[in-house]
Image (tube, rainbow, N blue to C red; front, top):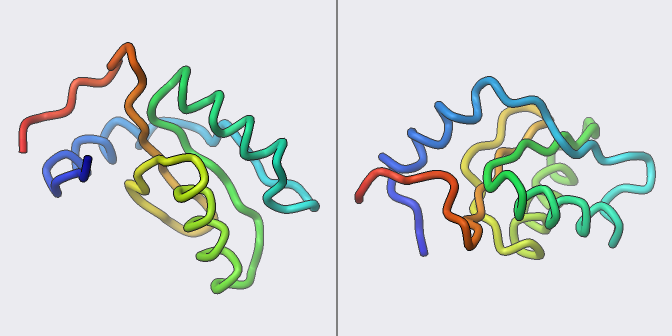
Length: 98
């Protein structure tokens, strides 16, 4: 499933008021952090993750790894925060049609 621009815009609007639910620590992207992100996606479908690093390349690699490992869609990345969406079985968020 790929997200259309209309769907991404809708998700960005929903994510605007959200606070990051997962913060990467000094150990970086570990198995425990990925497990926590997976659990949060199962519960909320739309989450923010904060990656506090000043190196842009490292940050982009972490963003890509999180999306790849969790199977989530990267909706948006601003500064140190990435917005992720993965539809759960309950389908809590109704996306607009393509």
